[in-house]
Every structure is written in structure tokens, then in C-alpha cells.
Length: 142
Image (cartoon, rainbow, N blue to C red):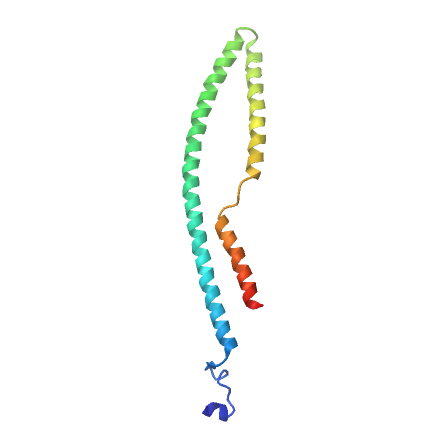
């Protein structure tokens, strides 16, 4: 009180006024936003780590399947070309087998591209909660 009587505002003197609701609201909002941000960051880390672990296992399985499938494809291709070699020139037999696999590869690529467009973005729950947080923050400022 003595400071106010001498003309010194307690907020300027570094002592916040306990009666000032705006200052309290700003402190609370800042604290809430900081806590919210830390929680969202933690949620994103957990989601991405879990998704990454699952994706790593799936990638390993697909890698092993691809190598094994590739070896099988080589052997089946050679057998098919040698079978055709019984009825036509060897070069034509291998060319026909190559064209067949080229067509199969094009079809698989197109189907894969269509399915890739339908993939959901990672950390979907984090995106949703961030949208809710933005709505909450807008309501608090209005």
C-alpha cells in the first residue's frame, strides 16, 4: 500500500497485483498451453514409436518375402523359357517370358499406386487432438 501511495504501481515494481484477473488468466492460460503442448508432444512420440516398431517388423517380412519370391521367379522364368525353347527359337522364348513379366509388373505397379493413395497419415490421434486443442484455445480467447 505504501508503494501505491508514493505513486509506484505494484505491477511495474515487479510485484503482480493478486487482484488482477487478467494477469491470473494469462498465467493460467500460459501454464495450460505449456502443459498441453508437452502432452501432445509426448503422445506424438509414443504413437510414432509404436507405428515405427510395427512398420519395421512388416518391412522385414516383406523384404524376406521379396528376396524369396525373386529367387522363385528367376527359376520359374528359366524353366518356362526352356519349355518354350522346345517349340521356338531360344531368343523368342526368353523374350515372350520377359514381356509377360513386364505386363505383370505394370499391373502390380498401377494397383500399388492406387492403394498408396488410400493410406492414412501417421499419428492420426495426435492430429485429431491438436484440432481439438485449437478449438479449445479459440473458445478460451473469445
